[in-house]
Length: 83
Image 1: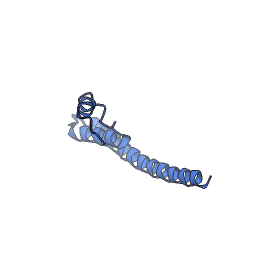
Image 2: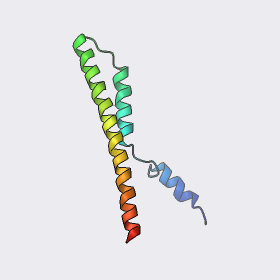
Image 3: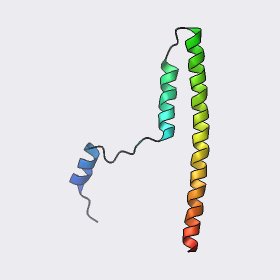
Image 4: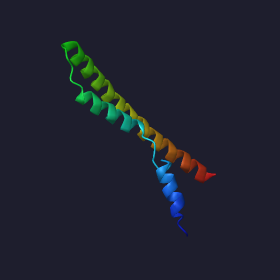
């Protein structure tokens, strides 16, 4: 099998080889941003705390959805093999 280095380089430079971020990556990014923000009042501090809690819940729900999706994909694969 011949490797086309020009094609690989072109795809890399154009960003075609980069995988798109998933929900988990976006949530982690927002959590990091929230951790860096310094609230100027008690109200802002409580809002940041609520936002952080909501993002933690989103992470948990997303993890459950990913697990369920994996399970369903495996079941579909088994069903397709049976036919």
